[in-house]
Length: 363
Image 1 (cartoon, one colour):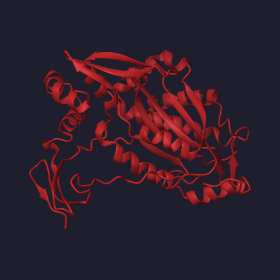
Image 2 (image 1 turned 45 degrees about the vertical axis):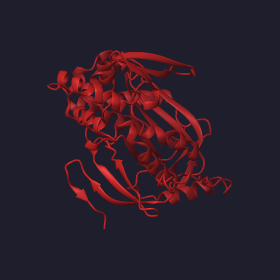
Image 3 (image 1 turned 60 degrees about the vertical axis):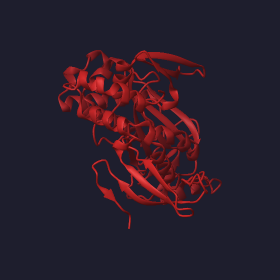
Image 4 (image 1 turned 180 degrees about the horizontal axis):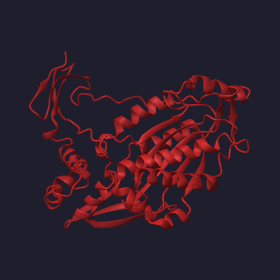
């Protein structure tokens, strides 16, 4: 037993029985989906080889965004879309993290707190960009990904932003590049981030539930130069749809306990941790997002609704560098379609049997 699905199939019913009355509905939905993934409960796809006519039955995936088995296809599609919109020039990875003392509150008020994290951090970036000391333009472009876990599945909410290295100035329609090694001062970002999150919580009526000392602490903001956009996209792509722990980190499951691998920050040495299966599932489920919550968000000229086209931004960046740089060309490995193990022929989908008994036959 070395997969999340097998762990849930073995211990999930016991976990549900123990916590059914207090379990959030999205946790139950995630458990049911992961237990059913790639089993008859999720449905069956019926394929036929176009060369030899051999039939093939394939169990369907659950598609749940917290299932580690179902993220590869989503990652590939997202990466293809982002590469088609990538910009020339340098980029930054900026990470916003909250103090440990406020994490319990966020975990108990996820929908409103996660939205406030996005709002406060993105507004902090937007607020400093027009300052002539830094960038002198009012329209940056960046996208962010919410993550909630640390390496041992502990609760650790933070947002990663990939930021283009400059801003568009709507006043004169020009591109203002940043330094290669500096975007905005992290200490100033930290103070604005903290203040705006506090304002959001006060407006929502939750300020009294947060320990007052957190407003005196520094809220960590980290900024790293990551080079051209293709490098950051390839790094972040598997991270965008990553779940709290992948199957390849499960070492063993025995005597009702799960042992998994992890690395400490700034270390390449693998370590192991063993948790009781109930505690392992609890830690996993605390990273299940509220239903419908968007964990990837786009801002400024990277927002699809921005009036300034991304092609215009790309041209202005090239112009600002005297056309010495262009958008990098990136080729992805081609899709590897399923083929018949008997003759190597292509598959043709003949029917889909859903879990509810309905059969769909493609026209």
